[in-house]
Length: 231
Ligand code: ATP
Ligand code: MG
Image (cartoon, rainbow, N blue to C red; front, side):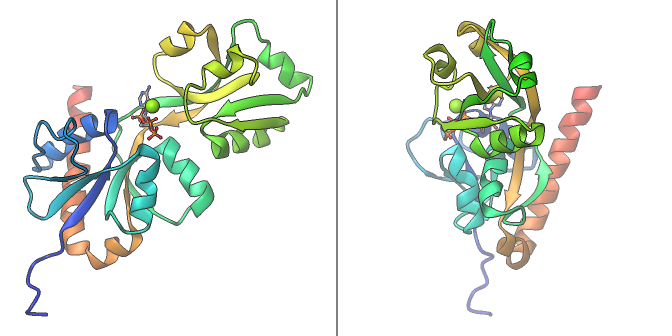
């Protein structure tokens, strides 16, 4: 259509904090500048140095929703958040073409120091588990054949075993210092977590001309960063 010569503007959904901080250098390596004060500003729509790309700032757990519905063409989400989302929406709700290798941590089971988790499992005890990640936890304990009663929380999971709300928690662990500070220990690792680039299915087709070069540059930036980390 000659009346619409402009390519569509692409929208990338990010959450504030570590994902934003770790994504900005990858964007820069892909040739896209983001203003330094963008993270601290209250603006929820942030322009970039590329007139064809803008950022929107949403809650980490909302990134897959914005992308699935096409309010954002693509986004960056932790594999924890993504797995929880896809458990509801179905595995094919989103494309996930690139593991960005940022936001690395692990999903683990943790319990109070002195709680004999292995013995509780061997005895077939019913465990009460507090977590924000109910789908991941449900699948993990079902696979082990453990009777787990899940208690959904939205934060401060570490508190739950200390006040008798749960026997154990399923949560993200990186250094383990938050667990240690609350007399908890990691008793089982469920899996590795890192952030993924996720893409709306319709955008991948209808906006391929704008999206594909950007995805290629981001993938190249990730590969370059990993090569540099090795040498
Ligand atoms: P929301 O409250 O909006 O659901 P949040 O407050 O948990 O999200 P962050 O703490 O910024 O948001 O976590 C965002 C993502 O960063 C997580 O989904 C996870 O993939 C990753 N992440 C969380 N904790 C760690 C950690 N300790 N080390 C590395 N990455 C982490
Ligand atoms: Mg958090």
